[in-house]
Structure formats: structure tokens, C-alpha cells
Image (tube, rainbow, N blue to C red; front, top):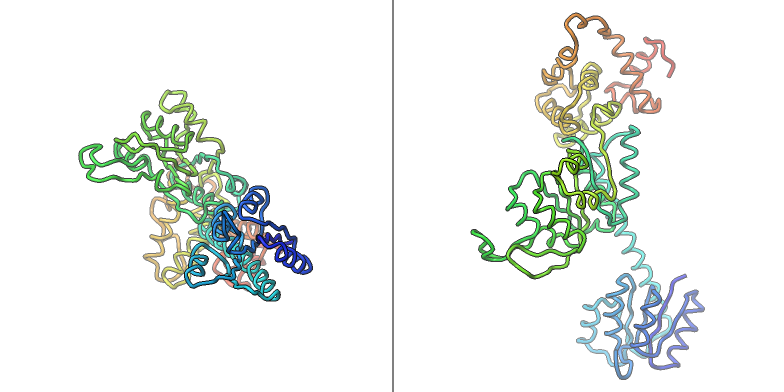
Length: 451
């Protein structure tokens, strides 16, 4: 049931609007002054506020409008006045009024405007949710995988996104730490605010300090003007500190204070500047071990790892490689207005490679293969020599051919693998393999598999 607040210093008007709006199915509260209306607003929230512009001595309708827009911004406010003018109408609209009605008003008109205000409020809420969902889909697009380890990552992202807790993400280079940080940001209440990534390992200490905290003019040679730091610039949003393990001890102290106090001081200034940032950090080094070695502050470590997310290396979730390949080939195909698939022998090579550069290396490998491909089917010859030769390099010469499978065996294993990961969805399996369903059935029959 929608909640309506009626503010008018005329008791008869209060009673009339309460009776009419209650009959329409709304829950109605009344107030005789602006001051009383603000006190009620401290305890209760309303969907729509209807206020007379003139409320006797003290606060007027514009004051009520501004106050409610400040503390209950989703509430819609309708102002009513017997002394309308263009100036007051413009001022009301600028302050955020939904509508501006003049006395004597028609009851039907008031009811109509209340219903329109409620519809507008719901549309704004739906649009905000839709934008957040769309933003989340974009940011999650490259987080691909159905392995148990990745499902745990997705669940943690979902649980932590709505909070403002600091998050520490572990993972080797190329596992997608920034993608996880963006997913957290775009699934949380700060989704419409800015996301600032900072690579702590790519900047010298003095430059990193200036980037994070800002500086005032004359603070050091070259500081020719005041500069806002990222922590100040990102207030309301999220800051992602990648390779936080590379931060110097002095900067660690400043960062800890900024997190705990939610305030910063620019270099060369004593002025305290309040901030409001969500901090997400990442490292490819084990911070607990660095703490034991005295290379990272224990208090900052515990402050950063309120929530911890560990991204598995690609070699530990090889079952996700076919899905990643399918995803990247679709993206690369859209960019080139072409369709790409991968041959079974080529996919077999990708499955057997250890991927020291993880998902990033896989993406770069496929991009290079696509760039030189003319047929639309990525073959083993399109892949780098290091991938083609990797399995041989990892085995002893006397074992080189001992258990090398035949092409038929590779095809059988590949078919079985694709069927398993697609839940035996034959249309999807055929699409991944780059063949039609008839070919899929013939292949299954050849290997005496029932599908």
C-alpha cells in the first residue's frame, strides 16, 4: 500500500484529502506545518508528499520539498498553491517537484497526479535496476566457467557486492582479478558511480602517492597546480588496487589510515578531506607470507582481507577451456563480422597446455589465430609452436610415443567432453564443435555412443 503525506495548515483541506485518498486505497498521514512534516519524515518514509506552498509562519512548501528530496530522494512531491507564479513554478520544478497544482484544485486531478507520481517512482526504480543488471552483464561477460572453483567465485561476488567491505582478490597474472573487482562494483549500490583501477606495481612510489592522495601546488618540484587524488576523485565509487603487495611501507601506512578514517590529506597540505570509497585490492603474491617476512604490514593485511576471493589458475580448471574458447571466438567474430569455430585437434592442444598466462594468454592466443585465419575454423596449425610442442616438451624422450592417442581416440574424448559440459544438449554441442547435428549423430554412431 502506497504511503501519502498531506501537509496543509488548513484542517478542512487535510481532512478532505485524507478521506479521498484513503478511499482510493492509500495510507494517509497528515501534518499542519512544515516543521511537523520534517519531524514525521525523520521517523517514517513516504511514497508521495502533497504539500501546500504557503504553510503559515516558519517553513513553507519549498522547504518541505527540499528536505524530503535530501533525506528521501525517491519520494515524489506535489505542491499546491493559491498564489502561483512562473517564478515559483520554475523554482519548484528545479527543486525536484513532481507537479505543481493551483487552488482551487479538482479532487480527480489530485488523485490522478498521485497515481502518476507513483508510476514515475516505480519506473525510475525499475530503470535503475535494469541499468545495474545490464552493467553487471557487461562486466561479467568475460568471467566464463562452470567449474566448481568458478562457481564459488560467482557466489562470493554475489554475497559481497551489496556490502561496502574491503575485498582481497588472489590470483596469478591473467586470471581476471580486475574483472572480478568490476563485477563486485557493478553488482553493488555504487554501480552508477566510477570505478578506478590502479596498478600499484607500475608506478614509482612518489608518483603512486600523488595519484592516490593528490597534492597541492608547490608540494614538490613539478607540482604546478592542485591535484585531486584518486581516493578523493572516486568518492562514492570504488577503487581497485592491483598488485597492492608492491606498495611501499610508508604508503601502506597512509592507505591504512585512509581506509579506517575514510579521509585523506593531499601531499603538502594539512587539510583533512573526507572520502567515501569502496576498496578492492588484488595480489598475485601471498600477502600472509609477506607479512611473516616483514615486507607487508599485518594491520593493513587484515584490513584488506575482510573478504577473500581466490581465483584458480586456468590449468586447475581445464574443463572451462572449451567455454572460454567459445566465448572468445564469438567476441572476436563479432568484431570482424565473421564466424569462427575450432577444430577438435586444436582444442585438444589447448586443453593439454598449462597456460602460465592463464585466461589472458588464452584470449591473446585465439586473437592471434583469428587474425591469420582465412577459413573460419581454427586448426592446430593456427596455434603457436609453443602450444603445439608443449606436450612433447613435458615428457621424457623414451616416453614420447608410449601413450599417444590416435586421432579417432582424440575425437571420441573430445565428443564425450563437449557432451558432458553441455549436459548432452546436442544442438549446443554441435555448435561448439562447429558441425551440424547430422554430423554429430554420425560421429556418435561411429564411436558407438548413445546420445
